[in-house]
Image (cartoon, rainbow, N blue to C red):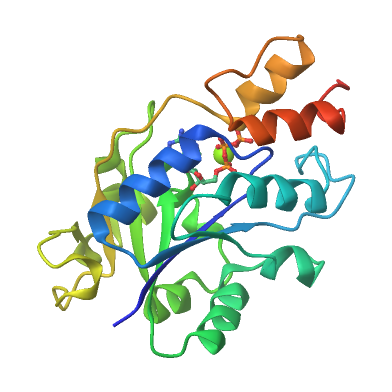
Length: 218
Ligand code: ATP
Ligand code: MG
């Protein structure tokens, strides 16, 4: 059975924390591939992205180049409207009807699942892999929605990986990883202050940010 990880985010910009985390999840869960899905966000939204959707997608494409099993997906950017995970999931499901699909989320992002449109549906239609992140204990995932999801949360026991038999009740798998303490917010601040991005983003992304003068404004 094919296994696909769906790794969504603003990716403003994509950084080595994302790549390292996705590589470790892919290896530990033995996912066949990971799709990186930058979200479309309406321009000029206060809390929205800083770089345009097309710049963020192109940086994700550059970052995935040369990583076996990693691919940038334009599904949300091309939709050109606020992206809902349930719709994204159904589009990918239509392309890969027989695959096992896993949303990959940092625990910080998972704690917001109550705000997702039709999140119960999303949980019925695919699996989740939740990874820890510096500053966010993985076990906090169990308290999401006041513990309402507790019975569907469990460890990912990776004998046969995500393609093997899965415990019948578990929809949400907790996977401890060695996450890097890098965030896009910190990267945007470094660019603004004129600091280097060495060791924080892939070289091609660094070059793209310079060439297109991203993140320079306040
Ligand atoms: P921002 O600071 O703008 O919020 P970010 O670094 O959190 O950016 P996002 O695009 O918000 O990046 O995150 C996309 C996904 O990647 C989320 O599920 C998030 O939890 C996860 N993620 C981000 N950075 C890391 C990291 N260093 N290690 C593990 N997971 C990460
Ligand atoms: Mg974030």
